[in-house]
Every structure is written in structure tokens, then in C-alpha cells.
Image (cartoon, rainbow, N blue to C red; front, side):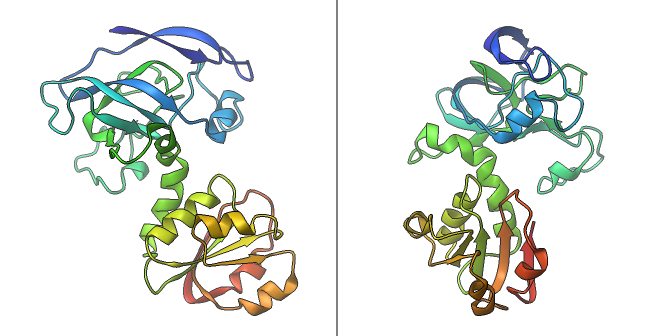
Length: 265
């Protein structure tokens, strides 16, 4: 085992403070990662405050982890010392499944979250607000050389949250995609949908973020505080992805979806 240094909430709603703890001994299929950056996700705040489900304390948050490989186990083939890598929201899954569907592991029994959870041995998991982590090879991701490591970290949660529905519903050339909201999630959706080749529209409450939306890759921008928006865009979109947490009129937005189109909440 190795001693890690990080920051933890010692109890629900407690402020983070310096905290030392033991990382598990690496197995043959493990990668030991020196953490360089860890994004601050709003779900970290929810979980530290114990707002979703009974938490495990002390709690070391962080599931947008980027760093470099310190050491690999004897059976690891995808990574070597010094590689830039990332770790996202979970570090194991389907522990007891006879067959494992690697494309849908997040829905299978045995899902182990990167922090605020327990691993197969019953020990608590600790996240990225720390100096290193031990993770199975299959849950480590390569970070391309052309991505800055600090900028890559949010892709491990906010990025995949938008990438997943865009890919699942086949966003790309010839598809019209609307992103509701231009915040932490919404701006990811705009950049990714644009990169996939879709025609991208941002639907935001006012015109305040128009310049940002267009700079990020949006083709069109409409304010939702103007009723004419919903008249002009009726039946316009193959895919609408909602990224806002505020209450909205679902029926009004459903009117913007093409027949057999999709709205992701």
C-alpha cells in the first residue's frame, strides 16, 4: 500500500481539509497514476454535502482526473510509465457478471464509483483531490498529446455527459441538433456536436451568450424568452439535448422535435 495526500470532507457538509490515506496495493492489471489535475464537478459539491444518498466519510471527491502513469502492473499492455492518462466517474463494474458488456458497464451490477463508494473488497474509494490513484487498466483512458492536461480533465465527466447522447443518437452531418443552455454542460455539447459535423443551434434564455455560442461552433442561436422562437423552429430538430437544471415547459420544447426525433433530458 502507499500513502496518499489529498483533501477530504470528514463529515457531511464539512469543509475540505488536508487528509492522508492509504491507496490499495497495485495488482497485475493496475495502473498507478500521479494526479496532476482534477476538475471540480458540481456533483462533487452535492456528494460532499450528502445531498444525493448517504455518503461515505471521510470523502475525497474528484472524478475528472488527469495525470501521468507512475507504474504499471505486469499484465498491463495499453500504458507505460510517463503516459498522459485520465480517469472518469467509475473505476470498476460488473464484478459478478458472467459476461461483460463493455459498452454498457455503467448499467451493470457492481458499478464502482471513483469516490464515495466501496470496491469489491468493501474498502472505500477515494477520488482525484489527491496526489495519486490506483486504477484497473480497463478504466484508464489515454489523453492525446494535442490536448492540454488541465483542459482535458472536465471531459471525463461534463464531456462524456454530452458525448454519450450525441453518439447514441447519431449526431453528425445532415442532422440538426439543438442544445438547451450554454453552461458547463451546454458548451461541451456545442463543441462536440460541431466537431461531429451536425448543424448546431443553441437555445438560451436571452441573447446574452450569442457571441460565445457562435465562437464555440454553433450555427444558430435563439432566445427562448421570445415566443417567436418556438414558432420559427417548430419541428426543426432531429435531436434536442437539455443541459439546464431550471424548470422549463417540456411541451413547448417537444414541439421543436421532428417526427421520430429525440429529446434528451
